[in-house]
Amino acid sequence: MCLNGGTCIPADEYALPHKNFYCICPIGYIGERCEIAEKKIHILFEKNIIISQ
Image (cartoon, rainbow, N blue to C red; front, side, top):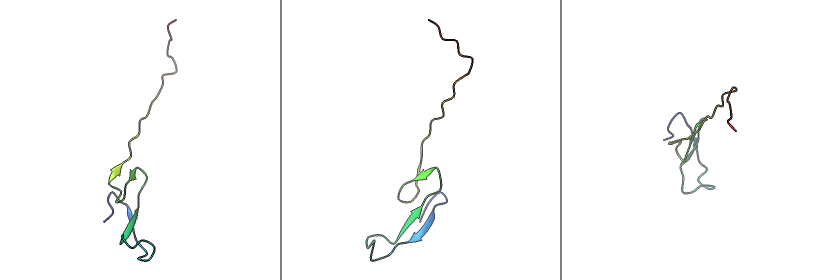
């Protein structure tokens, strides 16, 4: 049911009549079934950058 190591939690049929379960996704994944990998951009700056004038 849940993908990428997500935890499947049975849904309360009275609170969520249209769903049988929901997923708690691990860090790095989102979506109804944890099917989407979050995208991250890591930007690093060199300390010794020479800026021209």
